[in-house]
Length: 396
Ligand SMILES: Nc1nc2c(c(=O)[nH]1)N[C@H]1C(S)=C(S)[C@@H](COP(=O)(O)OP(=O)(O)OC[C@H]3O[C@@H](n4cnc5c(N)ncnc54)[C@H](O)[C@@H]3O)O[C@H]1N2
Ligand code: MOO
Image (cartoon, rainbow, N blue to C red):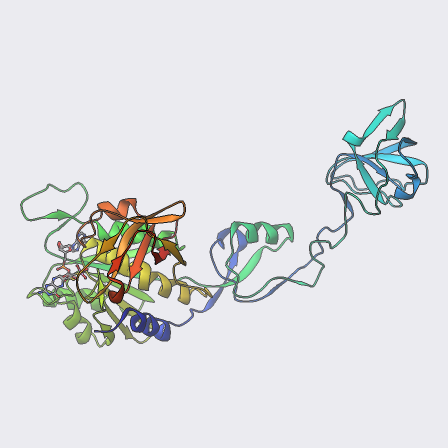
């Protein structure tokens, strides 16, 4: 049995970055850049107006009420704009090229135009006012995004604006999941005595999809040694990550630990001093990592968020792979017995975190309402209302 901290360290120590791949930017959201990206162009590429109004020479504005003659127009997308001379103003719109010679744009609301003349109500007008400079955002050749950046929607938009079409990123793991249990029913099957509807594959598939892992090879096995070994043998080569669910405790029909030994996987740890999820096993064979997740549904999901998700993120190049931790005051007092650290299904509401009813590891009802886990080390087994606790925010 290892501590939570030791288990996390061992996961980190045995999880390697996956090879890089080139992806179209349109299919790279959520991936992590493996190389710096240099800006192929400057942004803006030309001087642009940031307002609808009039391009002028700021030096013309020596007092309030100056009148200039309107010469021409510049609209967004226009290629040629005549140069501006002292005493002139050019009608201009947001995003349009600023004529050569102009040094400022006065917003329309600060002007009045009549009969080809415009009166400016603003004084003084600083040099460069309402003009986006060439390269103000980024200059050609500068590093636009560094290796290790996760491609957020903002990053994708930024790269699109730079006309970057392909990116080199770390690939995401190829994942298989093996569900064990004689009691498991597929959706829609007839409910017969002793059976349950299988919940854990759908849950893990949904959680993986949020990490950008959209394909999971699912397979099922009965609780017997031979079929468990055979099922695992099929999953070695083609996958970076194999998740096994159930059959990892000490019962007479729990064959997963033994089967992993039979296929030559090396156990890196078995059992973590935590609740739920004590019988978690982590193993490795060649470049494939195996997590045997305890079958109790809440144990499966806690182990997923605390260990599997960080491993997926580490493989895909995330610099900060663990779920986000903050310290918050707990709304209600809470206490527990036992010598294992606890992960409590919880709800963050405003400035407080609330431990939810129904913490048993068979129960997903509380998980369905949770947006966080409270991590309480065994030493902190009694907390008072208002006491600060460590909160792990679940990904949205
Ligand atoms: N004598 C002991 N018994 C148990 C111990 C122990 O230390 N000594 N540990 C308990 C803990 S803690 C956990 S957690 C469970 C883990 O059990 P397994 O990983 O072997 O899982 P199973 O026995 O196969 O199933 C447990 C539970 O979960 C249900 N289950 C399994 N798979 C699914 C699924 N895909 N979807 C929905 N529900 C599933 C299964 O029906 C059982 O109710 O062991 C304790 N026992
Ligand atoms: O560790 Mo188990 O998940 O407590 O039921």
